[in-house]
Image (cartoon, rainbow, N blue to C red):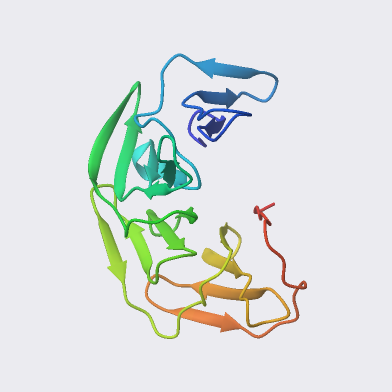
Length: 193
């Protein structure tokens, strides 16, 4: 949350149960926020701060079906403005393992999903699917906004490639960067520094 200068952590899974809590890091201390997530459980959904509208946005993700090994995927979008969660609308396709980042130059949230094709953008009111060809392959993906270049970078672990792939999003087209990169891996994260 760049407006309040806080890092926000929400949901996930504890050792034996789903977690619905929200924590904030103020630079010195972790603070428990006295409210719960709007769902019973949220695993591997998309979560980002929409700076232009000063709101958190949560979409997609999954929860375990009680007494089962099955997983139920969400297709809803929730926004948090101030002190409450509001259901915004149906989001991108029902799936988990979304990655989302804010495009500061265009005031949009950009979302891609490991499991469903397409690039989605949030304008503060609704999601819009943006068609683009070529598009990054499906696989573990992280989105990072490169502020000094005013562009979105997708880092993709394509199962068919021995290295990570880098793709640039300009708001309408993906461009594959053919530059040397790190070996392919799963479970990775990326941040802009």
